Length: 173
Image (spheres, rainbow, N blue to C red):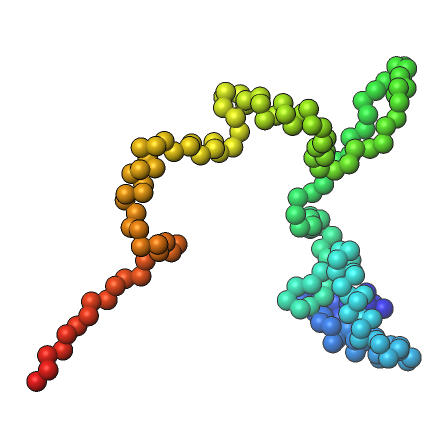
């Protein structure tokens, strides 16, 4: 019915819009379902996606038969490759069929001997992985630290200390 409506108004080079198609169907068909407009929208979209009709400036028309086919959006899928074996070769059966591998990285094996090896064995550069542990302070560093800190018992807070505003003295007159 939609193609008949487009062909009937094909004398117009611009095609016909949705309301013109609906009016043509209403005049030619005596009994229409109450959901006619919804069905019309659905079928127009289906025909547009399949390439049976083309939409230009809100007007539907038949596609030009000489126009190149319209590609879909995105990268096209890779073509399926056929196995390149001659029929004269004898196929060797697989020794044992294992279940397909799961996706992602395989889980770690919790083995105490492997943990000890990974902690002891250095990486390629000769250093162990990660941040090195803190070095123990020597006696001279402990003495310097004790003398440099004030002994009032207050610890500094984190971050930058707030700016101290100077007290302005107002002269009394």
